Length: 219
Image (cartoon, rainbow, N blue to C red; front, top):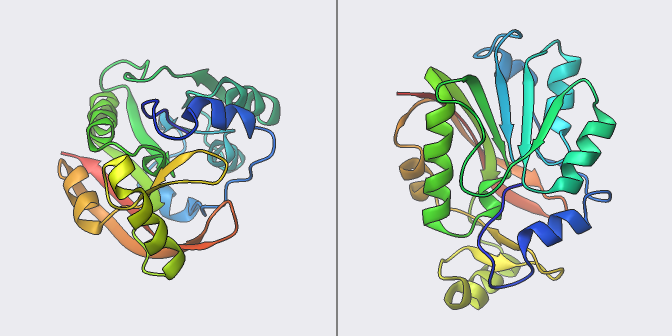
């Protein structure tokens, strides 16, 4: 998970710390697709790794140079307990504590949905580009706008309060965002698109949602 600014709704760090032992993330990870672009000896960084579900899968598939960052100390603690062979570190907002051009691949799973602000999303993508080696791979799964009544109602309800259409506040207080495909294309404009696929996910709260898989290489 990744921190967004405080303000509307529950503080994001507070929320993810509070659910660190109970949430099960559901976005599917396609290890076969990932392995087409990233070798097992590559330096792989999972930004907003949560409790390290994807890193655990990669570790079991033979990847050894794995590092997960998350701003939630309790998520990081859970990750260390569940997968002690993977390195996990707490990440403060604003900068990934990683040297320039030090990662072969970055994973970004359901992180953008936790960042309502366009500015904060842009900052994160710039940081990811900074730490990626030339031609390094970015693998993203996240959420797109939906057209069902439940989502349309909450998009309209929170648009003025959160300042962007597609953002909303969950009943438990966390802020989330669904995106237009145009926004996603613009956000990843400095990556060469290797794969892009619209998909339908089951969210961690059990609902269906439109989403996408993106794989790009740093230009």
